[in-house]
Image (cartoon, rainbow, N blue to C red):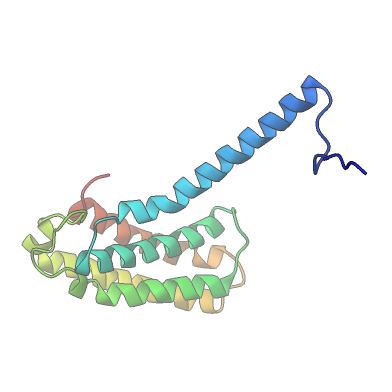
Amino acid sequence: MIKTWAWPCAWPTSSTERTAKMRLRLIAGAALVASILSASGLAYSHSGATGIVKHRMDAMSDIAKSMKAIGAMIKGETGFDAAVVKSAASSIAGHAERIPELFPEGSMDKPSEALPSIWEDWAGFTSIAKDMGREAKELAAAADGASQIDQIKAPFGALAKTCKACHSDFRLAK
């Protein structure tokens, strides 16, 4: 008995079907490459960072992730979840308390985005970090009893202003 080999799936019979399957494979491949590249973007931006610079870049990434999660709720991109807002704001407050220790004088090794103005105006820098911690705690408190997104918009805006203030004065422009 001679066995013939069969394709595990139906082979497209027309050139239109073959073209459609090729396009589908191309799109799927492109999507996979895009997702891998976007996922590795954060790792790439921190590549080469070591020691305290890496620790602070990781902390800033955590803060950004938390801000984006809350921002997506405010923009209506995701549903409002007061527990997520409270947790994210509490995480930001914890990072804010540690910001001064993450910036020992002269820690500007590449790929750091810190400007020398941090140490030239240490009082201003630490003041913004304290403001960030206070505003994050106020956002967490507002989220604790919140049932609507409008109840956290003002405290979130106040917190976002601390990020902008610090970035405009103490971070390399992107």
